[in-house]
Length: 357
Image (tube, rainbow, N blue to C red; front, side, top):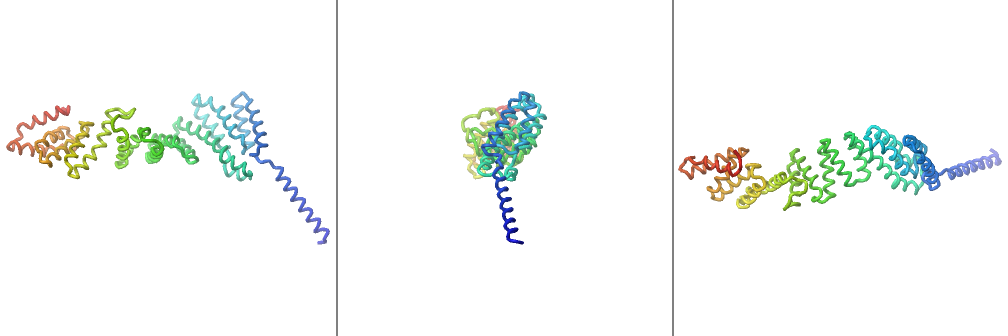
């Protein structure tokens, strides 16, 4: 190759490179201020359309034409105005269709990177504009799925929103969704997240519901832990919205195992004190406190004092009735010349005091 040809070839390459560089310089970033002004002007023109279905179609066309735009939040907000009448009419199918169509057109981090959007425009778009616009659409869809009783889709959308930005309100909503789905494992997971964010004096309703679920799942340790937190938070009053009768049962349930533990330690005075507290809250709820007070008095060398408690455990007719009957008769015979004469009067008195027939 002659020297002249080499020089010509080098010049051609240089010219091509310059042209390529000039072309790259001429390419306008979709998130530049210049492009935003153009996009916003187009958006404002679309807003002039008074027919909402036509406006919605124009906004969708804008999204297809400008898959990445700093005007995205304005477009998404305007689109929600077009959806609003269908929301008011509870036309869940139409709202779902419209919102899912918009959601499919939303850019992602991958599409932004694939478009080679330069920094810092890409960073601001990904950190601020895109997440807020995306969340507004997803939140509408979540509510629509929920209202339409499409709970699996509502849960899926809620999980997506929560993963992008965990917050206590979404945790509470997910807990509610999973409770309605009877997915108790997931319900307890999100319930725990809610309890970690709110003081128990505010979240006691959820704590009590979680307690009931735990007892249903036979996770008694977790159930008692939740019950203890609530009872200890309201030592002297019934929480608002909880019925007194129900609250007394909860308090009896709280004190009962503590009384049993005292009995196992052979601290009979403490056991009697705590079982009497259980009885004060739930006189006919169970025979356990009567039976164990009877045992505690017997072990404290007070067989006479044990008799009326064994009698009450017997007449309640529950789990400890058979054992209570045997101890009652043994104690009564020992104090009445091996006779049961008059025991019926003891039992009648026990029934009268308990209000049972």
